[in-house]
Image 1 (cartoon, rainbow, N blue to C red):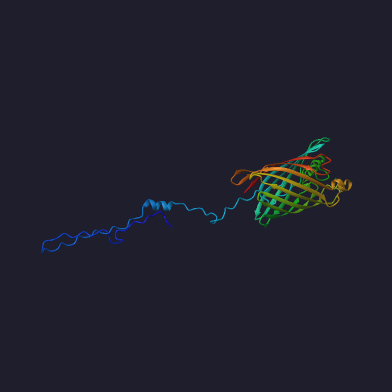
Image 2: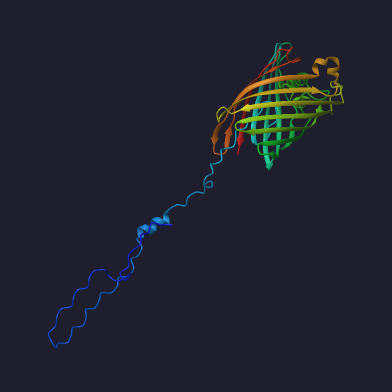
Amino acid sequence: MSLGLSSTARADDGPSTAPATAPAATPSGAPAAPPAASPAAAPPAAPPAAAAASADAEPAKKAGPPEGEAPKPPPAPYSLPWGMRPAVLPNVVRLDSNLAFQDKATTIATVLTGGYQVGHGVGVLIRIPYVYNAPQATGQSHSLANPLLGTIYSPKIAKDLRLGLFAGVTLPIGMGGGNDGSALSRQAAGSGIYGRAGLDNALFAVNYMTPTIGVGFGYVAHGLTAQAEATLLQLIRVRGDKFDKDDLRTNSTMGLHVGYAVLPWLLPSVELRYQHWLSTPTAVAANDALRQQLTAAIGVRGTVKLTKGVLFRPGVAYSHPVDDPMAKAGYRTVTLDFPFLFQ
């Protein structure tokens, strides 16, 4: 390998190819003159200092992909769901708010979520719900409802496929709970159930502690996100028996989300959500239309790089009920979502 140093010829590398000069004639009998001393051989030329310095200063080339291999593409962008759990829990602070308009009331159901990765594929989270309710028949009210503590384990089970396992529990400390709680706060908390399409009902059942388990699958590749999940919720009454007659309630939710990155920073998506009571609570026994609820949503999400390690992924979505009871009440819901992801 050449270092930029040229070879320098040595004076004693070999005999000269020029013809030798004949010696001058001397008088007869005179001693011959001694032959002229040949000049001393020149020492080898030292390498040029500038060339050596240039070679020393030449920066090392960055290691690239092996010759003949194309560089790996960046990871496919992930379409963050609207009402479902994420397939992988990032380090996140997220504020999402549902503005639920119906024929006789307006409900704003907001959830603040904090998530942190504690290990490879393992994350912990906390969710804190707040509801503002403004029915036409009564005065405005609000409730800070039940917080949820949970964990997500999401190992990669194939090249582009992840398994999502979830476990969590709500703490029954929401406003309006108990036999002596505020009636308006209890009403506000209850309005958050359909304000969030029935998916987060455990957050708003302020008299119940609710252990929750769930499973999901998420495929992310080539700009496409496809995700499905199912969740089981066991509500256990711990207070407020004067208002909630059921000791136990068993609920379930399911969801399907599909999104596609039309641009690296723009992801439209659609979502289908279903809630179904597996047991028969008192309210469902009185009105079987309350047993289940199906809703659909469509939205778009952007990606803004704020700093080297912080992404802002704002989104807006519209959801509509497919059947009663939300369809009968005229629900139309707009979701505003503001997640900050820390890498």
